[in-house]
Image 1: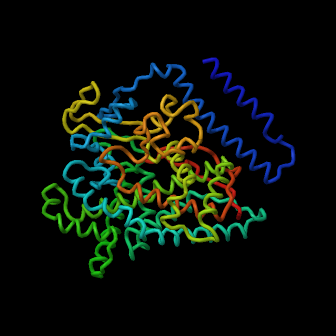
Image 2: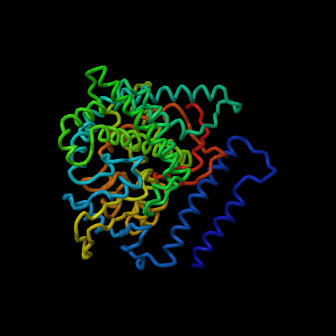
Length: 486
């Protein structure tokens, strides 16, 4: 314990001598250096706190499996890598998503592909997954480029109008959220994208209300509290807005072959099965649209924000990524699918960002019947919880620098990044792995490659490093960066 206390004290003492003095003259360069150091210090302190907890118990003495409850929900938390592998290899429907996702989180997720199990989930995945296959994602790239270009022009205008010559202080997470919403609206909902923007704003408000609620408390979601009344109101408004989009599409009788059309056809083709499974047509459509709207844009926007923050805090990696992008996209050419495949450094940066800041905090499953994982028999109804951050930062799996930003660990791909490849789970595990992961990776590469080719990024003095859970792991105070043209 004394060793860790000494490390903390040394770190704080070191900062006093390096940071600019209170009364000294501060230029943009020294200010960026000061902020850069302070953010790195905050990240290091956060990591040292984590290792202090591990140090107290000793990693070999930590419980890899333990049971706890939240309200009436029983959760078996596992960090044992072999058990996580067994969860991933389970291809039967005996492991599904917990019922509390469609109940306690129902207004946001409903009975969409993310929250259902068994035959309902199988029907939905059959409809939705093919829309995110590589050949279809390639067709979306021009939309991604067009949407990103509009944000680049906006940032260029802010730089021109900024008080600091050639440098703008921008809260990038808000712009990236709007950008991702625009991309998913255009790519998946075609000509109805403008209405999608209004739906996003409502879903964002609903997400923020629901993130403050505790799951597992009986009847709590039925109590007429201020928060619940707000949730009920937003749920009705979102349903009404989505059905307006659907009815307009059906009235137009257009031939668009986007995701919305596939959901409509799926609701029609599986109508009898859906009714038999306890879902009506409107609920099938609304819940899956909500899932795509929420999961399809929120997680990508947050990952892009964390990625730019880490590149701003690690300028050497920012330079390496930019050099690669400019080498591949010569003469300002727009990136295409073949170019994206060649961007190895950028891929490593994204993978490392997802390791340190995965959008989801946990992977959760429910035993739909008695199952056995390793030597433990798990009764039906028990929920299994895998804490992603703990698994992603175990020194025994990732090395002594597990808490540090080091994209080099992915130079040989995911297989060579850790001692056990299935310990890397930002998109989930097994047959419930994220159907849109390929779309997410392509979208991130397009956005980041275009931004790095146009701008330098450094940390703003107003940036406060504070990851927070709002159903997803996001920067509580946003991400403010200094942006200047290349």
